[in-house]
Length: 197
Image (tube, rainbow, N blue to C red):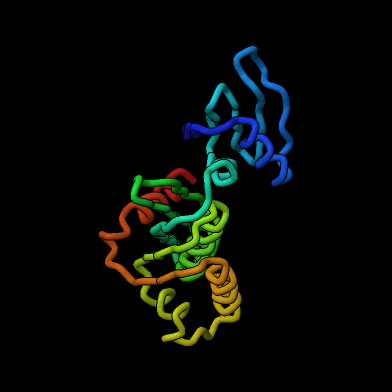
């Protein structure tokens, strides 16, 4: 449950500018509350508390943008194609900023890897980072995105284009293949999502 120390009126304006409806608080202690997706932000004096299963839906809008982040992504498919899930983590010098894992239906492992990369990049963009250093344990996806491997599948080609469009939003980016043990949290999140499906 993220707690953001901030000027609550500035936070309110930021949410309204992003199209989020802000309502009066439910108690005398609440300045206001706002919901997006499955997240609810509640403002108190000088802080906003975000509750719900996807706090990043609102947290990205309330945090100051800029800076550098490390992104980790992983996709998992049980069967190829089969039930699939994604996991992703955003890390800065302050530790884990955001992470997520969810099922994405039936798909191939490579499609799941791309979906995890796309979700991590979208979240980093929403948080306003200027620079991202992306790491994943799928050598195929990393080399396809970097242009070292061709992409024969029309679906994967489309996902690669989406990844390039997202990367273009950052001032600087790198994409690196890492061993699975370096990517263990993203892998864990994807597998937890599959286990709970």
